[in-house]
Amino acid sequence: MRLVDSHCHLQAEPFAADVAEVIAAAGRAGVERILVPGWDEPSSVAALALIDRFPGLAGVAVGVHPHAAAETDPAAWARIGVLAADPRVVAIGETGLDFDRMFSPAAAQLENLRRNLALTLATGKPAILHCRSRAGERDAQDALLAELAAAGFGTPAARAAFGDRPPAILHSVSGPVDYVEAALALGCAVSVSGLAFRRGEEATADSVRLVPPDRLLVETDAPYLSPPGAPRRRNEPAWVAVTARWVAERRDENYEALGIALVAAFDATFQRPS
Image (cartoon, rainbow, N blue to C red; front, side, top):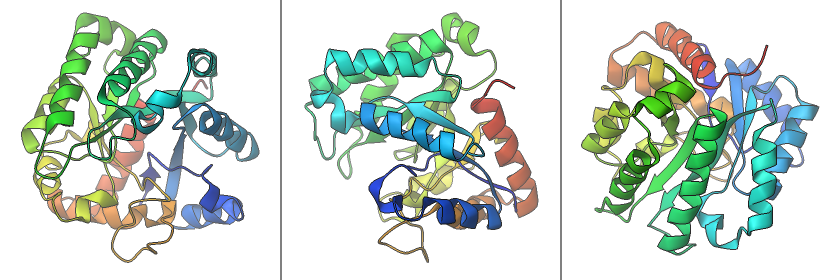
């Protein structure tokens, strides 16, 4: 089965000692594309350094995660803006909202999200969106949809910047079905991770059936969110196969056909200069 990992933090410390072996193991498992997103300025710089070492990686995303929103100063943001112009950068993020752990105040998260979304529209590089609410709640999902609409996603301005490509990706999708439906109406892509196997995330099985093939992705979010069977201490891109097979079963699709569609959707969403 052909595979992609649309979100893998290979620059994170757990991979420092053996990242080359991890990338090689992913290739043996069928993973043809790996995207490496940053979560703040240093990790964005590190992602670019990693792709210099391993040119076979499919691209980098630069941006500021909601957890880092309050600690990112204007100078760091200016440097993120410079990095975003690099042709190896194919997306903006990871950004979004996290009203579960609240490592940054909500006001700082919203300001940070708006900066990332503005950079997305300015560069024509899609936003990678983290979104979490506390168990049983949906305030982050509703706030994210409101911010996307306010920024102009789903409007002619976004279509001018992106054409038929998704302007944003719901990374490691989490939330009710109508949230995913609303995001799809704004043109977003949806990426499924090992989070789908956790208690409280049952809605993902219904949501994944609604996503058009050209806007469906899978990911590991490694080193986090290990799917069943993967080591809890450190997820790796090779384990995306577990999630991809789960997706194929929920959509009643042939594994091989889904794999072909995943690679095509990845290439259409994250475009690099030839």
